[in-house]
Length: 548
Image (cartoon, rainbow, N blue to C red; front, side, top):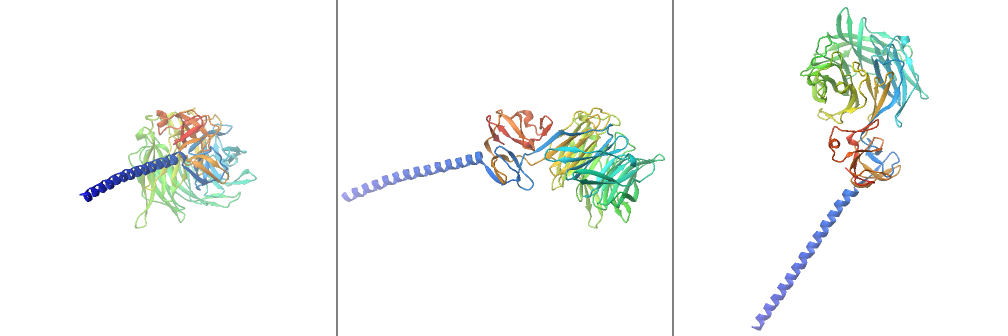
């Protein structure tokens, strides 16, 4: 009996010890779990408020600088897309009828315009200050030349000027920052009346043109190929071949595909009316000094309205941008591809389309009033379209479009309005755009001034990465998330802040404001236009930003 009682007591003691151990063990587990949760929470909070990265840089960066990543993977000051309007002006003695521009590299910029005879205006762009130092203009009156089109011959120092039925090569030289022109001989490529020539440079020596020609009441669209001979004052463009490719059409464009292939496009309409027809394109091959044409292809369901433009994106892919009267004179873009069949034959085909501008309900335009469009390629997958938006009082407008790997077109910017209303709505805005490099372009506007014109310069960088918390000339530490102090700032709490491409910060609308949330909205500060991709964050105190 005593032995049994003793065993029972021992079991009770063991059970109590087990219970106590279980309680202690559970408590220890709970304590460890709580500590782990706290640690994880702190880790997340630290990551959110102190997310930083250290990267090399090509320039001296200091605390508070707003940065993005450059194409070489290094840090750069500034971010997003900024357009600096009215950065430069140029004066002329008369009102300009046509305006064309070429960027030759190393800052050398050449304008060609005319009132009676063509004028070549050289200038030197300083990409740091965005200022162009204009030099003495050169008149082409001695050559009796006008200037309807101008293009650079490949990567050479030669340019080609077409005026009416005449063509002339010009060599552009620079020595000790002085830009001079060496004028070649004039070639008359046709008799009769010729207007609106278009140029496609095939190589450093060959250039193709398309032109509208009237003679003895017969109207034709023609193509011709020239070859540049010599490279001194006796330089001349020699006609190698000339052919008619269309009857009774007026509006037209030309684009290079290769050194021997180019495409000619026009709307299927009778001699120019406001209401035009579908887009028709034909492939031309220059071989053995002859031009041969393939069967045309047609983009149905659209009605082109006179002016349109084309640009080559890659060796077998281009883009056409045009006004479509079928959508209230909105602006459309379409991919045009050169395909090779299994049998080795080449053929054209239309691809993805995009509405660039809806027309804003502007409706039918008055007779003899057309949107002037200019397109230039920024890189292999990006182009800029600049146009006089007649649905918005003729204001000059531009936007950027990218082409995806699947060849679809995507808008990557809103429509940036960069000029006041057209002072003379019955005239076209003669505008042109030149690409400086993959991050900069210049837009030349000849009608915002009575005599002369103005220049807007656009700069494109990647989106905001963050703000520098420590930096020197070799590398910088950048905070990308959370609250960050901005030295010497006087911020308005609740306001969204943006940066220019040069790194200057500007105040936007209150965070959550309807206009602030509009993806088509952008910030206008004085003469500067700033894209939404330049957004930094929202002010949470007078000296702190909460990064987006």
